[in-house]
Image (tube, rainbow, N blue to C red; front, side, top):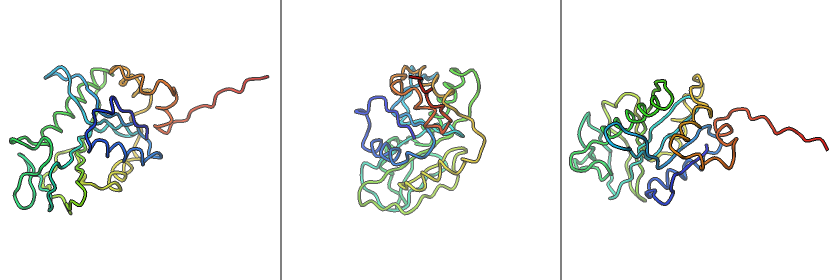
Length: 217
């Protein structure tokens, strides 16, 4: 996977760990853009933690790291804040003051779909992924989410599950190519993130890249 970061100094600790997960996945086809801002109808821009493009999907990623260690099953109710099995509110960003991380995820997906359609002129389905990362020594053995939102998944601190999440649809038809992704990055003025290697996007998406012609002496 090709990792592109707009201002790495602005990443949170949890986001830096997610970036490491991507660096551990060099053979996984895809492009990951972190710390980006896209146009939003309700405000000037909306910050997304990350966008992942695989050949089959575009995925909006929300990265949530516990800021206080809490053990036990993480409960995701149909609506409202998330909490632990003992009833305590989960110490996660976007879960305070009655906020609902799933509502935020839905808003991120909607804004991304609107931006993609506005930029490309064609509708595009966006999946959502909420990645919950734990503190050292923290034990969250499971997730209780009886009514998951459609097209949205939650992964709690499991690199292998994350890899499987990306790979499980690899046999589906190709929806995204480097020719789709490059104009989207350019629309955000992020061409500089890959301009040094013109073939980087195509190689990351596992597309055939013709070797340069051999010059005759």
